[in-house]
Length: 222
Image 1 (spheres, one colour):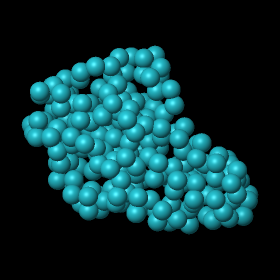
Image 2 (spheres, rainbow, N blue to C red; image 1 turned 60 degrees about the vertical axis):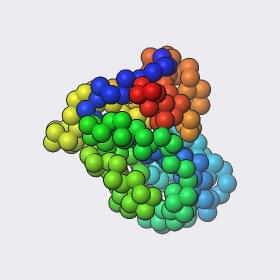
Image 3 (cartoon, rainbow, N blue to C red; image 1 turned 30 degrees about the horizontal axis):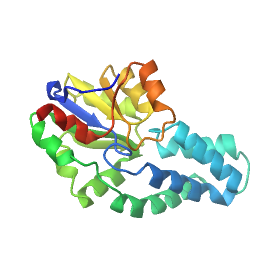
């Protein structure tokens, strides 16, 4: 399902970060590769495949999977060092990657709605990054990320009343869709920067609303 989405009907709008707010998917994919390269090219490529297949899942779970399932028992950086190396590689890229066009305009159009970030990225890093990029003020409902999972974040924010219904989650991964479905929230797939292969067929199969960019959400107001 594609076409116009009536964003104005929602009391809460929740955004994923990577691939939705920021054009940062490639930055993070490269960082996973570089962080795990000490284990060899084949292992690093396997890490990238796991990362892309599990878009939206936290780095903590991905690196744990890497150590336990891809390179069990092999000598190399431990979890703490992998996380540190990954963060170093990601930092510079996140400061320079593109911000979704139309974001400020959409915020003006949906001024009565609460905006949140729910991401697989590190929560403290996200909050600092959004301040540095000048967009933290847009997300009056808060910026949330790992180590808590998206399922846990949604449950906590719904229970506290911070997320009010009707609510929509805007994401770019299959995990984002699963998280929205688990929380019983509406979902729309943002496709422009996604790393999900053959996403068109997947969206059609699951009857998922698909739009190209955040900016398209402003068309309702034209």
